[in-house]
Image (cartoon, rainbow, N blue to C red; front, top):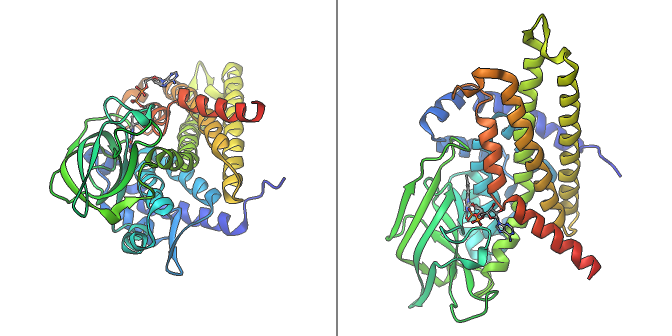
Length: 381
Ligand SMILES: Cc1cc2nc3c(=O)[nH]c(=O)nc-3n(C[C@H](O)[C@H](O)[C@H](O)COP(=O)(O)OP(=O)(O)OC[C@H]3O[C@@H](n4cnc5c(N)ncnc54)[C@H](O)[C@@H]3O)c2cc1C
């Protein structure tokens, strides 16, 4: 086993930290106040080659999954809300195109998406169907030259700012549960698309948007993958996105943990630093052990993905462990700051809420356990 990070990746990480110091950190308070990330930032990420996908030799291709995880953790340490917007663009929207789009679609949208000029999202969840992905009711009816979409996607990260959405819909209502859905690439400037920004308190400043579709025409060549395979395809996208969301969640845990360690070394109570209380020292050691365990599982899932092995169970294990520690450590860290942690502008304030968001996005803890259990049983059945 080799746990060394390749030199090229360490170099990227160092340059990315410098990029974040200049292009993210100074702007965060304004973006949080406005609840908005300027398009310029997505372009800066694309221009710097910081996304997990690239357009190279006239092809859309994935960069190292480990590199993307390290960069995502770094961005989430500063702002899980900004990191999730980049993730939704690349690991939900663009990954849908990458895995299931035709060469013509990739050529048409891929270059501008990796530059950050065209922004993407994925809409699957509906008000009555989240964990039960197959239960969606949005309809796709066949029409001349394409499809007509009708229905509502309840919670779409980047729904407000995106140009393109990967959308699941029922194309074959009479078919069995596993053959009913298809996946489409929808241009969101089409007639009949209505967007409503939701008032959320997590993952600020990214947007969470309701997307309503009324007779929205989607050309036939914008069907992604195979008709009737939408369920399997969207689950495959989630398997991929669970690696970066685990990294984002780990970054959420580490961001709060590092702020707390710094505070524990500075703040004196009863004549000594908080870190000098042995009760706190044990809590710190305990959380560090759990963070390191989650990181090892994340790196294992990256390694499996980068070597072309099956990473379905590993990515769910990584997300499960990362969410578990993030929920606990972020609350503990906020507690360590005392009253100031409830002030909205304080850097620690966002972390417990963002850990909560991580526990929902791309599958709840129960859903991760279902995947872990099913994969385990495949080996014992
Ligand atoms: C901030 C945020 C951003 C999001 N962004 C997107 C996005 O970009 N695109 C998108 O499509 N969706 C998005 N979602 C939706 C998210 O994926 C769903 O919220 C999530 O999958 C859970 O679905 P649900 O909310 O319908 O909860 P439900 O599925 O109704 O779950 C309710 C509860 O039941 C539990 N449960 C479910 N199934 C089982 C089971 N079999 N056994 C035991 N317990 C179970 C769950 O763990 C949960 O505790 C986002 C959500 C949030 C909060």
